[in-house]
Length: 583
Ligand code: ADP
Image 1 (cartoon, rainbow, N blue to C red):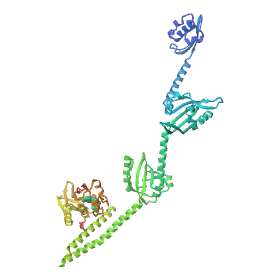
Image 2: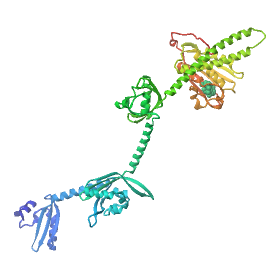
Image 3: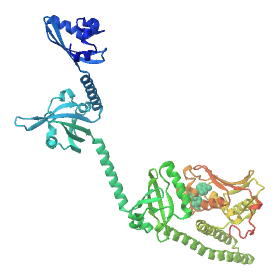
Image 4: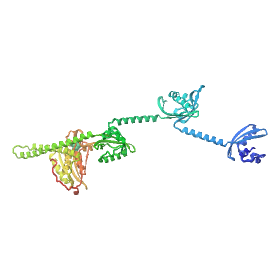
């Protein structure tokens, strides 16, 4: 027993020499060394064994050489080697698990050379799970095979040459547009892969990722971007891209609309908030709320300040792109606005022009009527009364037209008079009783016994329009009924007819300006489509509401509800009524 053995076994030769080693060293009879030593002695053969000594807490390697009289044992501490081997095993296992869990295909190849040393293929040394899934070939079948022999189509892609270059130069190769054919269920499909190849020692590592779907999405995105770009650059419509309050990009159509140059835009983003006149801020804020809610703004009409301070009217719709960024489509409606302005001016001038001769016609007719009635012998009363009626109708139409232009210009003035609503309604009904055709009967029921504050002439026009319609749109029916009622704070006047009625979907539309239902029965009857629009405007200005209940061929009931009059709401500059509904 030498000194190294003493140190290794942690006992001295004096203690051990001449004793039974196995008795002296506790637990030694349980070690493989004991069994192997017996075996070696019996067989007379050399044995090698490795074992872990729990007493010494080390790994030992023992070479046992028997000869007839004794055994020679060479012991070596192999703990360090054992630990390193375990670590290696662990790390290899880690590598395999990681590589197997990759979604990308992963290969290790080594070059196969012919007798002249020329590379002819690349042997698959290792393939991960994804490699067998994507090629639909078990990896066991791939390992050991030449890659290009196994997949002959690969040779036509130029990849073999790239592999050779990596071996020769050591420079990695990568591409994100490797196109390869795949046959799937009888169909030839084109797939696209991303490939990276690196040299590691004398081997190559290749990683493959099928990016066909990603590429297709990218292509689609590119195409849709190109379409959008074409739309933006076509300048058919103004397009701006905004970030919060700033215009970060705009097409020429928009810049031209607002009189800015591209340089102005490039110098710093334009602030569309500053380009918006104060009266449109609220509209913009409402639109912003709607965008936050639904992602899209309603169609809004507004104005922008141009660079020179003038205004440009526009029609605009915005959509959120993400967070605070959005896109707006803007149409310059200056031409339409100008046309509208001219049309309004025309209506206003035309109705003024028509009113003057009508007024004098009416006055002269009354004069003539008085004179003729005094003359005996010739009775022209009927003719004169009919002329008077026609003039009244014409006057009503002209008044309606004039009022429309005043309403639209915000110039219709309202007086604040105390009005006995019962008296007013009964008076109007009486007028219409005279006017109505022979087969019509206009009746009134109920009272409110209330007073309201408002403009007598304008309210006269409201009820007049409702009664005119009730008679006009019930040519076959005999009865038109007006009823009056009151609640604690309101009075309601309803006009009910048994005429052609109005379908549900038209009931909101009929209050729009110039709207006429084009159902055959109503289109055949004369009208300008402004009576209900005026009525609604006037009622709204009085703080009231107007509504309709009807169904096709079921007659209609139009109801006007007005708030009760409060004396303190009457303006100080009270003006007494000046004219009747018919001049
Ligand atoms: P106008 O009668 O001159 O066409 P209005 O503004 O008074 O214009 O009415 C708008 C439309 O509403 C009419 O064209 C008609 O189709 C419908 N309408 C109004 N009143 C009635 C009613 N009492 N019965 C049926 N339809 C009506």
